[in-house]
Image 1 (cartoon, rainbow, N blue to C red):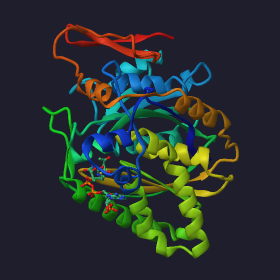
Image 2 (image 1 turned 180 degrees about the horizontal axis):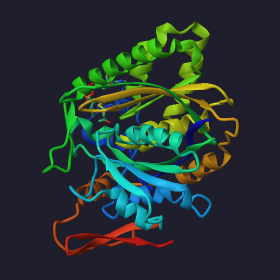
Image 3 (image 1 turned 90 degrees about the vertical axis):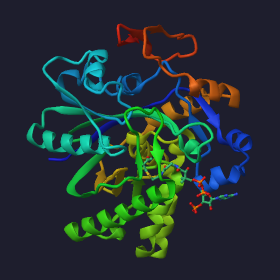
Length: 386
Ligand code: CAA
């Protein structure tokens, strides 16, 4: 029996910042951002969207009357939680009208949370092949105006269903993981913006990748020649390139070309959206699916990294039922309909934060189906306009 990713959808708001505008405003060379960092644009998230609404707007595309009753768990990976106690998965479950006889929990380990969800889901479906698990990665990446991390901001959500006989990717059972207490990136409870030791975080990412790649090869006896493509956690797309370059010399010349071509396909969407934290690896996988020329049975390697730090290398093969036409159309329409912000609009949107008292938000600039309307009696108020 094959188990893996059956559906994979993405959502982010249409407002975005062109990073050439950001470079000019910050006195940097545009090529530092476009080539040195590998980013062209970044999503800007209005105050009327949070991790719950981003997730709901993505998940509504993978949950409908054909699978609602099959979903046994909602595993919500995020590091942009809206409550220290109650999980975002419970709010999401209500917005999606999922039945009450399911488990719904939030998972936190920086950008690794959604991968923990995927692996737990894989094990669960192995025992309960008639069930599906909804896995979410939803975040808003914030470093602050005029910080070195500003160019690597972004946000959005991915929603995956994990099932038996999946339509996209059959996950292999082998997986290699590693965790270590490291202060490369963190966000204390009292802060809305992350703290980061930038260069150190890049080095730890590559070290973790090399370690789990070694471990995976020892376990499976597979080598780089067995892989058609790799998808990476992409906090910014140059980071994945640094990971790939660390192992590329192991491949033949022809295969190096193929891996580089497929890497370009895998970073196309992320380049235009920015960091999604927990969702980044899966947006990159979606980008690879939609923009590379993949065939059934080809093997893809996936590297997930969450600062603090946890890394995992796992793999899967393209399903026989693989079809990406609808997703390609969705992304083409989405990128065409986006609204480019001026620097002033971006700085205003970025600085609007939810207050810690009752508030009614202005929804006129947010056309999403699920929106945050405000706070009443210390409770977030959500609206489904569907
Ligand atoms: N043309 C082309 N390239 C140029 C250039 C130009 N005109 N000017 C500079 N560059 C290149 C530099 O040579 C450098 O390349 P290398 O990394 O290959 O050496 C690159 O542009 C970036 O330049 P700097 O290192 O000077 O950039 P910086 O000091 O402003 O900061 C950063 C870069 C450390 C990534 C910073 O944006 C940051 O802190 N980001 C957030 C942290 C992060 O994303 N870390 C990733 C690992 S942690 C993780 O993965 C979890 C997560 O999601 C956060």
